[in-house]
Image (tube, rainbow, N blue to C red; front, side, top):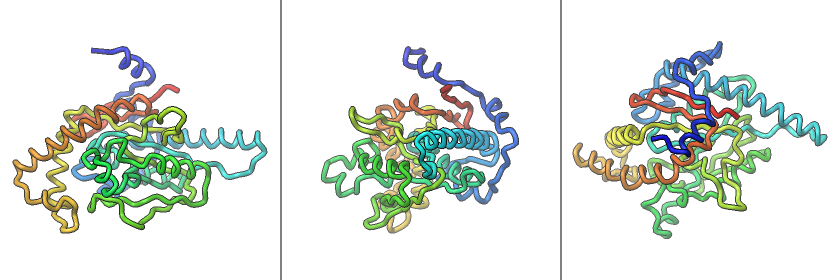
Length: 313
């Protein structure tokens, strides 16, 4: 059933099949090796060099053209104002569900974009760095809603991205440990006026409350990584099993107790967590922001991108 909202969302985009999108690569060179791609892959993510060539090379070409256009517009405004400051960093936002592959997309674009001479300085920040520490989540009674919008220090995230966009010489962010499942006390990540800042996270396309600013207000371009909920659920369960055999087995892991679950117990546990936490967050908070993205990468059951939706304006 096509609803009015769906029709409005669809009409805002040009939809391109995989082959149509692949042809837009033109002569963009492949600057990534198989060994490098192996380091960039997420857990249980089957992305290969064919996917990089067909999907991500055309995307980096588009982003390069968009970056160049943004720089020209910025230079025109600076000339009008009589300013001689260097242009502000270009900010790219990447959103999508847990287990959909957005982190791989972010790491891949971070690497590929840095190999263009026009923007060789590229930084990547994830919104995990702006989660409240576990002690705060527990105090507020929302530890079970980690990853939901209220579990993030959104004001700190907006201040960080705003400072980067304003051209601050150096801006620092907290560091999140996936092994310890918490913010690392005293640790920071510094961003020093890059050409491009990639901001990746579940909720980066969410609008702000009235009279406030949202992080997406500072984006020059945004991408939503999309797939059927049923497919993402299976990817989440598969990823959970892979982590149970690897990262969870580390004595320092927050989830060490899950490493000893049987195959059947682990599957049941993962499906429960998906249903009660991640699917609820996806349906209630993440998926409704898809129509705010400048570009949507829609994946098929095999993880491969099957179609691309590009906003017309």
